[in-house]
Amino acid sequence: MFQGQSLRVSALDADGVFEVCFDRVGEAINKFDDRTVGELSEAVQMLQRQPGLRGVLVTSAKDVFIVGADITEFGAKFSQAADAIARDVARSNDVFVAFEDLPVPTVVAINGFALGGGLEFVLANSLRVMSETAQVGVPEAHHLFFLGREGKSGEGGFGQVHAIRRREGKVGAVEDLRDRRQGAQGGDLLRHHRESSVVVEARERLECLRRRQCARAESGKRADAGDPHGEKRQRASGVRQDELDAGVAC
Image (cartoon, rainbow, N blue to C red; front, side, top):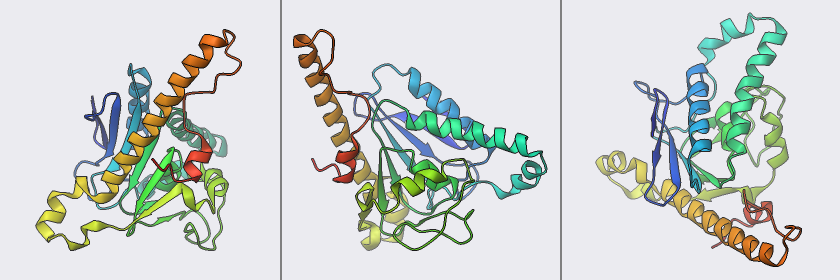
């Protein structure tokens, strides 16, 4: 479907469901440099054009999720005038918002560090599934800010730090999993990394959200049959917040 140097998009076996996998070529980690943001923009545009899109799963092929921005780009970026820096942040923010606005459920499997822009992108998903060993934080604050711990946050990064404040304390929005890979042998761990428990759980949650969305869409069609103006029809795209807060129990 789409193959870049930082991420790829592929169709999963479920009809209309696609996986966005961050897998930076030639490096051990994923990061949000200009190239990755550009490829994510291409991927989002491709998903927007995809007929019959039903859901998106986000994963990482590395031992971490995304460690944040590329600090080697900071020198050139911060040497620009303030308005140029603001435009650069706005462009990145537009990509994150476009992903967040996809009219289908999106579920991310957090298998390791999700820092800075990595955490900001995590919060652009409908639902987050987190392994027991994963950690999330905001290095652009005065000190690392971990969900559920005291910390400070400020504007910056990719313009999505406000999303962290909106969701702070919503434990139901983050699924803490026991990482069942602990008992695996080293070779099996590497071989089955992409089908670790956190990814399996994320796929299950995505399928649950997808079924709920389809059920609401069908209910809306029936309601429209008796309500030609659509006044009673509930919005079918996206996911209701009360479902996320409740952990989306199937």
